[in-house]
Length: 481
Image (tube, rainbow, N blue to C red; front, side):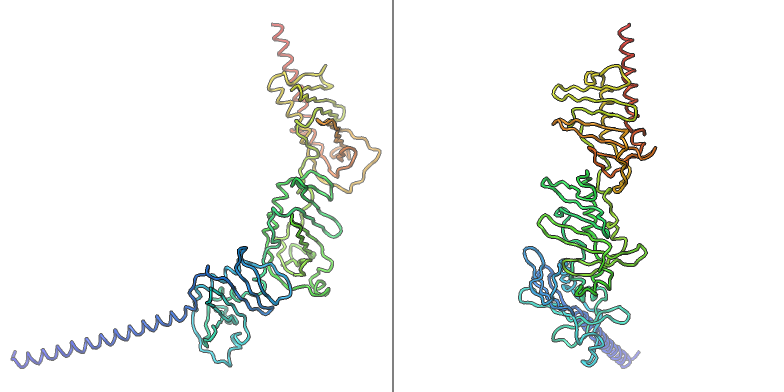
């Protein structure tokens, strides 16, 4: 190859190299510009970036009014509003606002003319402002998109319309229902010391804590023994219930009529140890209904719940009571005299001398139990429990009472302080008895098997007699030998 051809080839290669380098630089520059543009576009969608915990104040503008909420030592509280009704603030919602606003990012931007703002709900809209020191972070919240993919928002001094995630937008737009505490009762269950449930004209139950912090019943059975665990469980369940929606404020009698609350089917009243009272009326409902209407008497707020959430309205007195009629501990009793049909036996507990005695029609004379075998002493205790743990089967408060009927079962307790209490059972038929305490009808119905069943007093009396007879035979055999 000649020198000229070599030179020409070298020059051609150099030109190609320069062109390639220039093309690469051009493509790389274009790509960098595109990446930079994409980054700038992404950054432009990042609307806010601040520490949610730095927010000291939140201002909320909704159709019902303006609310200023500030963070105090006691947590979030409404410090200013032009809303005319009192509300209990949902502090969790305010925390959610701060969290969502702190890193709010749009999904896209739209160029919307000022004439078209109304179509996006941005002509008259709700607003949110979070304050951190002198910094204010504000958005105006319009309507959701027709497909419910976005919510349209704007910022002050920014003509751009942003589309944010629908779920976040729905929460941020919120409204009065979001601001209100959703819990049916906004008190701790431990602070409640009075509860009353009424169905139409009948009191399902009325209970209150006494000075010793023990629950006592006023109705339907005054002073009936109560099961504190069941009551606490009921209150814990009720204080965790949430309403499904806040409908409106009852501003006239017609509002109550519209929601069938002018003559409520249920009335639930609770009071705290601090004297605060809350009364909630519920409309009649059926389990097939989609919602139950209720109104808070103190505030006039009408709300809804689903039927499965208001099952506590079916609570009856027996569910809060113990299943015992009179249940003293053996240490509280000095003597027990028992009559069941033709059977009679007695038990004596001499606490001063640490002695116990048993006597029955089925044995020749009274037997000292305290000096007997462990098995007999254990059986003595179990026999006492079959009487003191006697349970009732059901309640029949309004049952007719035959004044001439005589009890066929009587348990007479003599307590350590000398007072006597008599539990007597009057037969209704071959299966059921009406229970009386010191001659007063208790409203409790006892089934025969509570006496004759495997854990009944008749069964354990028989076991006691058998055990005593066996022990007597052993003693006689030992003496003979």
